[in-house]
Image (cartoon, rainbow, N blue to C red; front, side, top):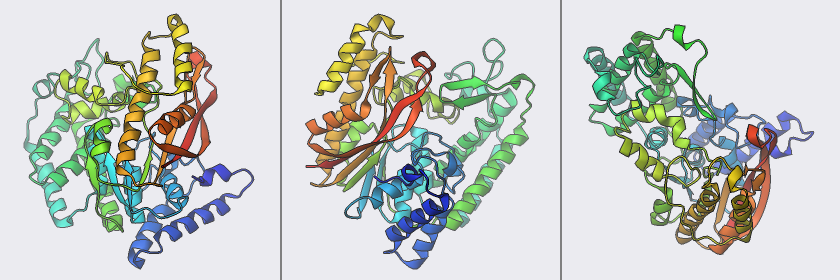
Length: 456
């Protein structure tokens, strides 16, 4: 996949942008003029020179600004991928939907997307972006939610009874994420939203409410999880602040929907399931583009823990455990089976090296976790093989990891695993370097790699 950002070298940014717009125009020139102008207008807001898998310069884009996901693809990664294919695809599948960038960009390009996402908050985020809305009804339901939330008396203690005790004041050891006043107003909005009969509107409003939770909380989220804000004890957030933030989020969404809701493709399929099961049961697709969780022993559900609990997706600890078990075995944060049936000489060598250093590992099951991770990836690839025609392309962005000075070359191992499932390697190219953990040196020496495969 020729990434615009890969050719920066001595090229001028203006040249890169001109190439990008030419690509967008080529991909949309078969569409009606109105659709083409809408697509090009949306893409024109996103012409940075950062790596195409880095999403920072795309977070202000319409729809993307509803909830900012740092780990998401940038839309031009999808444009680059589709432009590099020999034939324009009609359908595209993303087994790890995340924030929905692949699916949304495909809609703008006139490609029908299928997306799989097991995290219920992220699945709602994807659906909110992809859906079409009738504005009169949407405005009426917004007013109904605000009016109802103004009269509801939500009880945080009962509504959050099974959530971690740190969520609501008084918390634990005088630390809490939300004050009682803020939690009451958030939960009143949640109750009003849940009462809506129109499910599409319910999903959108729940996402918009989720978008303001961290901003109005005592914590911040980074790549290592959650931590308390500096000076949070003296920070004052009120119930009125919550209502103003919800109104601002709604107004931004209304603007985006009015300007860019009439996209070239309005259809989509969203499967809210474990990708390991859902891929093989999906409808036939002629292109796949995705980035699975990286085997860095980070449980990505932790990033969305606040939204999952406060918005009612998780109501019990069993719900939390069930969601974690439905994700790829890329971490050791929960006890689970690491049984695997995967063939790769490079993987076997890496796992043996890790096993020799087991006493130095911060968790003794890391070797088995690495083996199980690639077995999960094999299952996903096997499912793709079943639903894709011969000659179809699969592009996946993967990231290396390192434990006890043993580097896991995920791109190379994934290529061997894919070969065992009937895929041939078209090409593999590094996209950017990622920083290793402080324990592993803290240098930018881990590759993020694009692997392009084709189905035999």
